[in-house]
Amino acid sequence: MPMNLTPYHALVGGSTQGIGRAVAEALAAEGATVTLISRNEASLREVAAALPTPAGQTHDFLVADFAEPAQVAAAAASYLAAHPAGFQILINNTGGPAGGPLLEATPTMFEAAFRQHVVCNQLLAQALVPGMVAAGYGRIINIISTSVKVPLAGLGVSNTIRGAVASWAKTLANEVAGQGVTVNNILPGATVTQRHQALIESKMAATGQSQQQVEAAMLQQIPAHRFGQASELAAAVAFLASPAAGYINGTSLPIDGGRTGSL
Image (cartoon, rainbow, N blue to C red; front, top):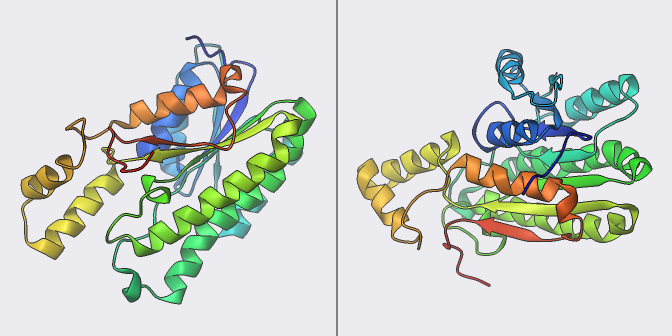
């Protein structure tokens, strides 16, 4: 299905690697103009230069660390001041909290994760939604986790914060739907990314198992018997960002090969 994102400008978080980069590539391939936002300027410059330009788009980037919400807010405000047309697509995506049992998590860990995920999402929505409403078109898509449906063992802080993001998104979806803006969540399962590898290595350290053993145990829980690819999630994001998905709002879509044990 042609999605024709040529009229739209997307802001994509965490977009120098993994799912974020794949999303930026997918949106650009469908004609969207993409602005990347992350903390590593060298990587941002490299990725922006490599994005597809089928409609002759000019992609760019913002440098901001999602661990510092004030940086994110300032970067967005400065960009919008110079580009009053704003963004019609917002992809909220940033690295997940470190793993570990819930009772071992400190208040500082919760606070840092809350700022990085919930607070940054809120600040970007506050900055971008007015422009979306004025344009009569907006898509906010949050990359979260299947843990919002079934909490994952060993990811206590992540489970907690991801659930908060899902509740934030559902609330916002109800508030802005009548103004042409939709809010939806993509819930990645086990997807081949740097974070996926880090989680495998964490399990190896905790259990003494080899990578092959850890992966075999993970694959047993996935009906598809394979890990997902970032490009597969990105394709779903591109669809949700398109006009064709205009009546999809307030949903959380697992992309996990069938692993999530809930309806």
